[in-house]
Image 1 (tube, rainbow, N blue to C red):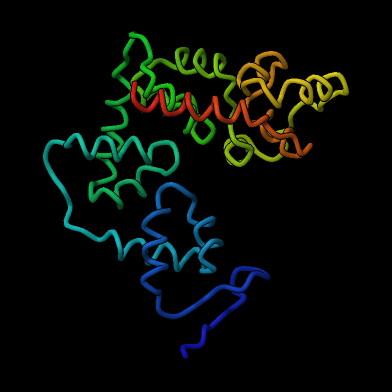
Image 2 (image 1 turned 90 degrees about the vertical axis):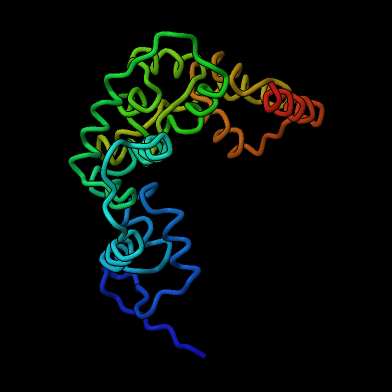
Length: 236
């Protein structure tokens, strides 16, 4: 049996040393570029330096040149706002200068048309982890358009994102008063979360989190209706 070699070189937290397993490398590929290197290191029990070194090895490919493909643009949008140009360049096999130029070009493309259902669903998934400026480049929209849709669907930035972007204490939310809690308990079992969020002027994330803390559940009939709506959206 192979013994794991552990070290405390990252403060008091022990980190694993030695050869990387295939499972670790696959996990690194899934997370790299979508989470900070330090977070990946904690998840894998490795040092940040080890994660960076392995990433450089895993993504060491011949440099691509010439026009960007549609697939590359989609990959760029996937990582944009989560990782910097250097990390994105490493993943895509492009020069960092090219990545920066392509990000600039994305920021110049702005659509004024109606948002599609797919666009709204994607925004709701990624809104919490990107700045509005990066989201504008990803969706080809203005910052004002991003913010209008975010308000409509009561979206909010993730606490971890706010801590990284603004600093500690930036994610503090208004305390719930008793009247709000009473209304939440009354509405939650059978009312859509978005409607509750609009009523209480809070984010959907806040509604779901507080309901979970209070042990609130949706009624079976409401859950079945949500399931039918999700199926309908998938095929429309």
